[in-house]
Amino acid sequence: MRIDILTLFPHMFSGPFDESIVKRAIDNDIVNIVLHNLRDWGLGKHKTVDDYPFGGGSGMVMKPEPLFEAVETIKAQDSDSSAPVILLTPQGRLFNQKIAAELAKNSRLIFVCGHYEGVDERVREHLATDEISIGDYVLTGGELAAMVVIDAVIRQLPGVLGSEESASDESHAAGLLEYPQYTRPQSYRGWEVPQVLISGNHAQIAKWRREQSILRTFMRRPDLLDKANLSAQERKSVAKGAVTRFD
Ligand code: ADE
Image (cartoon, rainbow, N blue to C red; front, side, top):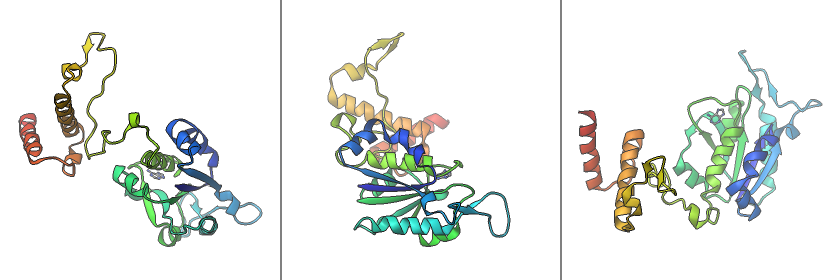
C-alpha cells in the first residue's frame, strides 16, 4: 500500500511512524508512507496556504489552490489514480474498525490534513472523496487524526501482525470488546488469575472468554451490542442480564 499524506506539519509524523509495528511494516515494504509539505504548493513569495474567510469570522481558512494542485501532482506520481482522497475533519464520518478494514483494501490512500478553522468548502465538494472524524472533539489539526487512522489501517494489512499479535480476537473484531487478559504471575498482591484460564480446558476457556466479551460489551458499550454478531441464545442471555441489572 502507498499512503500519501498532505500536511503543513510533516515533522509531526516522525515519532509514531518510526517505532514498533508501523516501522516494521514500512521496513518490510508492506507500506510506503510519503509525506508532502503543503507549503510547497503555497502561493506567491510567502507560499501562502490560508486566507481570511469570506463573510468574516474568526480564524483562517485553507485556500483551495494548494490542496487541489498538491493532490493532482501526487496522483500523477502513481499509475493508480483512483485512490480515495480522505480529508480529516470533525465533520467527517466517525472512524471505526469497519472503516479501517474497508480502507485497508485499497492499494493507495491519500490523506489531507486540514488546519486552522477549516478548509475551503470546494475542497470537500470537489477534491475529497471521503471525510473522516476520529471522535466528537476538535483537534488543532488533522495530523493526529491521520496518524490514528493510518495506524489502524496498517495493522489490518496482510503480513503486518505476527501470529502472536493476531487481530482476530481483539476488541471490535467481532463487534465486541475483548475479554480480560492475564499473564504471569498467577497470583499478584493476592489478586488471582481466574481459575478457568489455568484449567487447560480449551473449550471452557473459549466459553468463558466469549461470555466475558459479551458481558464487558454490555456493561461498557451497550451501544455496540445491537450490531454485534451474537447467537439467538446469547441475545437471550443478554436480555436476561439486562433485566437483572436494571431491576
Ligand atoms: N481535525 C480536527 N479535529 C478532528 C477530529 N476530531 N477528527 C478528524 N480530524 C480532525
